[in-house]
Image: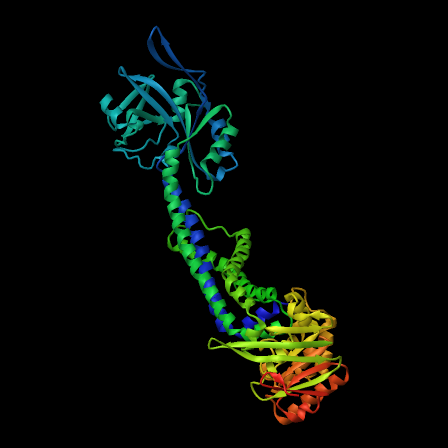
Length: 387
Length: 221
């Protein structure tokens, strides 16, 4: 028996009223938890889908650019100390950062210039699986290469060379079948020949060499700067650049989903808190007699205040703990319904449960502050009128 | 022990101040037994509430063992209400959702620290004393009016109060039960408890050592 016994027993006296109040706040907590979990998964899923529209980080060798001019003539920029990256070493270093779970695709590339029938053209070696992972918008009139001796032409390159799907092209004495021609993308890909990276490395006699690596990172929940910084730490002799416009564009979609969920949650929370406040206010008026008896027994204002706060806190504690469990279960069902469970699943976290059982009692106590203050301000003489 | 000097108290009614006590002075000694009688509206209950510190007088002094309670801090008043003074009312003097035992121990349940075993044992003894040993787990709603009044008296006993203020303690009881309660009060007074009782019943007032008659807010005699 202690001061907690008083609000606990009072709540048991009116089980219907207590249950209704608990239900109102519980619904609020359940909605907030479910929305939070669903928005995380939807955001994650959305971002994963968006990675198919390009990389957001580029890793390239560190270079020094020298602008050359002599006698008033500008002779262009020269790149000094250019060293190709080593494929295995670089991709392993990128995949082993602390935030490696945020790395979605690592696409290495080697770029080289060749002459085909006296036409200078850039040839880009790629890992097809990775490349198609970040460029799912690519479409071809034929097929994507399946064999090392198959190549893909950009739309402008095909026009320039007068070649099409099914034709053969010779590079450095090696014959390649053109499996398809890309539909115009409006990017640099239109002007190049794309082929298997290993084959190109073999052609130029530079096994393992890559010119740069494109990385698609999932940025929800962590800033892109952190990922860039960690890659830079693992690869100190490279230049790691975040394509901020891509990141920002992508994150704005994810943030929209999260902001929407947050706004709805806030509305629900404010409504539920108002319900708790109103209910506690009516409880104060109903329980003037109790206040009078307690004041006559030496309960000070702080004790009366504490009793009402405890009552609200108990509601918040129950709603927070039960609401988290129910919200988690509902989010699972909702994601199953939305067919998103294959992308990601909500994570059951003891920490989140702990936070809910701490935060929601605090919110209900905050909602009950005014009623509790009003109750504690009732003078014994006022309360005695009720006796 | 407790002395009220020239107590005045008014209440507002329809925008006007209505004087209820017009300069009442009263002195209560250790183990005293005072009955306050008078017609309805004479100010009996208000005087009892002022003496028990539940109502603050507009003017006058209330001295308890050397301290002026009219200027005392809230904390000091709470301490006195918790330990030295006990009040029993005509109606609704128990919290309906707490058991008989919990109502008896209510003055000691005001903190997060649980009530000690010794206090619980003492409460059980006091309930035994007032004849409720077999009803300690019951809720007040399952008790008769007389039994409820006994719980309030047991509460005063657990506190080892110095003064018991009783406002019409038999007002809602039948004659037989009322007499039992009065006998219980007489026994407690015999053990040294000071009692201030408001009553309409002349027979019960006669049980007190002294009777104060209030008439229109002043002591008639």
